[in-house]
Length: 590
Image (cartoon, rainbow, N blue to C red; front, side, top):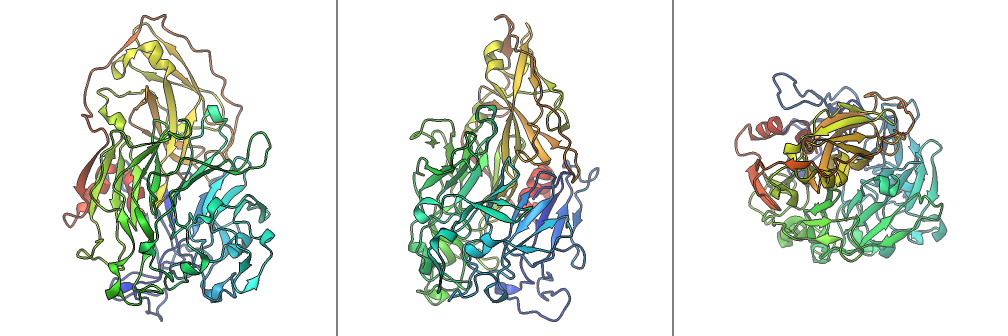
């Protein structure tokens, strides 16, 4: 998760894992594996500071101390969500890892004989002893990487699992089993919301794609969440910590998509709403918010789940598993574009989008870069490096170029600020006539200003990803120069938490390069707020101005993917991190 000062933090992880996942190295403090020299990271807090790509002038420094800063509890695959003041809340997880977070029979849904961690805690620590979150007890089993989104009210939307009428073998009234809630972390109370339709599991290892749709003046910055894909299996099929009870690679992933607005502005009861289905079912895919207001969906598989293993309840040895340790098959190579404002029935498109030829399944990742492309990397459904199995360890990264890369001219905004506030005085951005084409009045009327936090990407999720359109008016000069009178963020840090972000100016669907900036004070504190920015009226040029752009610096990369070897040399990974700077570091850390 991000921090207000533009640093990033990693919480928890594995025990001291050796070859083939062996973690039987007790005795040392902290526990350390003698082969890989890694230490027990289940309570670890690792941090990295931002840099601008020039490591000689601005080194990216790691904090990683086996005996230093630690969480109160051991957490593997916890949820992490930033709060309005920049504090991070850490929720749940396993104490040491596994397939799903339960034993069978499930007679201890709270602690699973010490293997489940149902509590939440804060970073930086608030002095509060970690408390049990009842949601983590009710969702016992399928609740790792619980899906969390801070809402404008300050409460948190949390989703995992689906409602059942029992926790096996202890009967529990079905009215108590709501697996979508609004959680007040101050009082540790939960407000029940409707359950996920169709009993589709979206959390790991079902790993459905999920995202908060763009926050815009049009929707009054009221969040709507979108869930697509995942997996549907009966309760017994999911198995336990050790392995699934069925051959997951034979089970087709869900194509179902659902929207929900957790806090409707009209005061009505929130409900899930069926959205356009995916063209094919997917597990392990992820959404990337693009600076034209659309969402890219890529990566994943048509069958199975995330994770890897040496057996299932049906296939009891690795040499009988048809895809090696992988619990999934049917890689999906076709990216999709989702337009949240298109009419129902026409929101998905593949028009002009090239395909990858690299399976991107378990341990894959994707991240928006400042130039508006998307870096795609990873895939390793294996305990260690394995380059000969059906789905090998993948060391090749790709760039995906969305359709707007076919434009010959892209906006080149000037005077973009380094910080944004919550309310307060507006600011002006200048767009020269040389950086767009067409009539200036039309271009100004079709300009949007986006603030995007790409998030911290891991396991098909972008933790902290948010996309917000700043309100703006404009003045168009006779020479075609466009001055954008731009509002600060809405005066509510819960809508877009403080920390790092990219600002894009998009004209006629063509975005500029993103400018790295900081939202808020840069400190963990109650963020200063002011009144909503008051903007002057828009002023046209009277039809005299026009854009003069005619350069072609980006080439025609519409929907294309370019591959680069991520570890082609001993220092290859470092070369890539240096060239891409802080945003790529976010990707690499996951």
